[in-house]
Length: 179
Image (cartoon, rainbow, N blue to C red; front, side):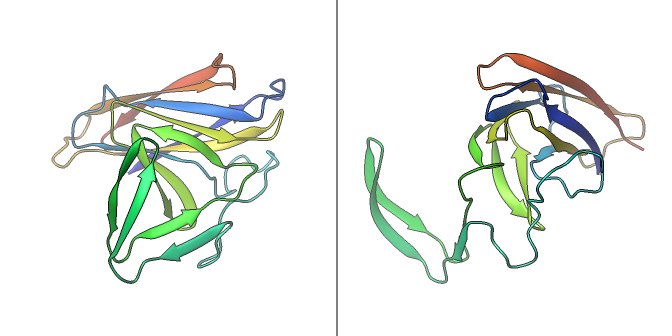
């Protein structure tokens, strides 16, 4: 596994959200690509930030885990039906405010070791999050080569940052190489 951390946001951007797009379309099938949404505070110590890392067992919002299988009659938008939720399903509800994930697509957001992680499982994964006006945030791309990858094989990941109006504010291209 390899990682690459970067800064997103802009001191001149007064908007309250940031969108990060991860393009893994050039990455071989079987490789894993993801984006850490919360930083652990180890990199870029000069960047001020509020810690989003949770002590073990402490939720920033609300959290519950289903102990038994549950069937729920529900209406979600125009779809009405029975939702079956299996034992062990965990719901982790983020509070409103800074750092809240507003929307995501092309991947699944989960909490790993107290930090949120977007597992990008489509050619392009996008996450839009709250931020403070003029804030700069730390994000980290994580890459794992596919099983059987040979030394020297390369994967290219493109990352684009947009502001609240959809204007591209920056981007990077990362080349990961199998050791």
